[in-house]
Length: 309
Image (cartoon, rainbow, N blue to C red; front, side):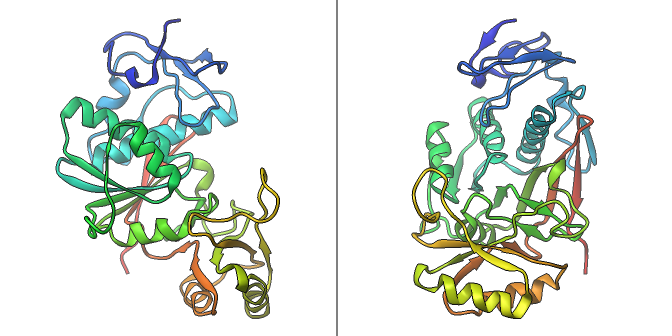
């Protein structure tokens, strides 16, 4: 087993097995794939670039990358990587302004974006959706820009906490929903990447933590009461884990997690909640995504396109 830096994945030794190191993290070579649970790093032992060579066909519904892993968490990380790679290969081109999302899945998309920029000498500028995204862009040596200089983006790529059958999304589990929605709204094409666990027929089927709602700090109590009174359920202030008190967003606001009781008309609910004084934005992304890439358990990537209304 040869340990190499992650930037060399699939790049240095085409046609032979290769594995990557994960800074002190344990790895296991199994079924042709070496995996780790550390988000942001990936170990792979594959036969050459066969897994990547077949992903550039935009119309393809299923892409096979390798044999499935046994560990559920490791399998999900591998699925995230596959989805991120396919999305970047299919939607990012030279001379584009790209919106970069936030969360664990986007790490793999940025890895692939940086790899393509180096290998293909692409001229790409990136607009971040959070402090995390900004750091990813800088750490990978990509060109950072903002919406002042690039108010119209060619494509935005982001993850999701849940996706329903009509491509409605719940986002904001990481607390970046407002900037994520702004960047997605500025893009000509909004692409979502996710693993198989995020796929649902209806919102709330898989994601049990509720709809994130960013609120002005002074208004979190009246906003929570208004939501519960009108739509039921419970709107709870999200508390921080490594600090005392609530989570504070990049915009210095609080987040309510609304745990709803039943499937709603999400377009109407989204509009109604945004009209409540003190609400900054909701984690409901309605009719915004053009396509979702799901990394699956069996080593494929499937796509779902926005239904035509």
